[in-house]
Image (cartoon, rainbow over all chains, first blue to last red; front, side, top):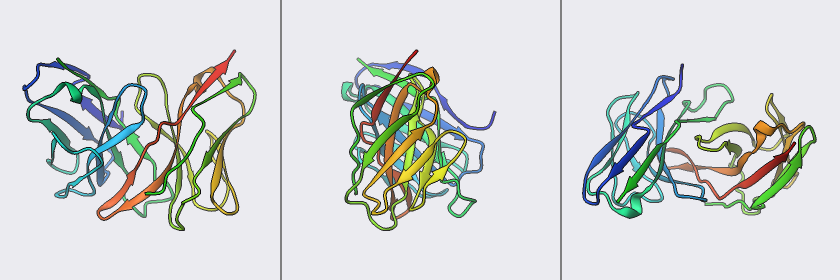
Length: 116
Length: 112
């Protein structure tokens, strides 16, 4: 099925460990995004990529790095995990500007990360 | 960034209409109004968006005030599956593309 695929779905890390969250979309979207959602709160933007080869910081980029590997894939890396990074991480993508009237974002189902 | 204000929670009965309000008094002339919803343990899903005119699609209707300082998402007949957090978002056009800034949304409870 077309959409945004995130891996892994669940992960437990020890403080100081590193890991990469993977995201891939098969809708030929230009823009991709990484959000985090803490319990009972709305989503906060970590990083985004408006197009292949470009990345920009969002609201809460500290402690994270991203790579836009190609048009399909956008990964999020935690170099040294901290308990404050315990959260649910969502990847999203969006249609190119100017395509029809749909400016809707498509979200993945999330990665639930716990740092102990 | 322009912000939105929504009630923390609302309740409705199944098969009745639901009107979810959103205030955005600092909206700029080029801000689109987007609505997303998030079902339990899922990522947000797009519901509807508009600029100035009222909009309808298969999921909902969006009524936008004439001065654009407020809007209302209308679910014509609520079902149990509509129980979710609903987010009203103004689309911010950043330097390299558009971004969505989420608030805390409205938790909609639908009673059978």
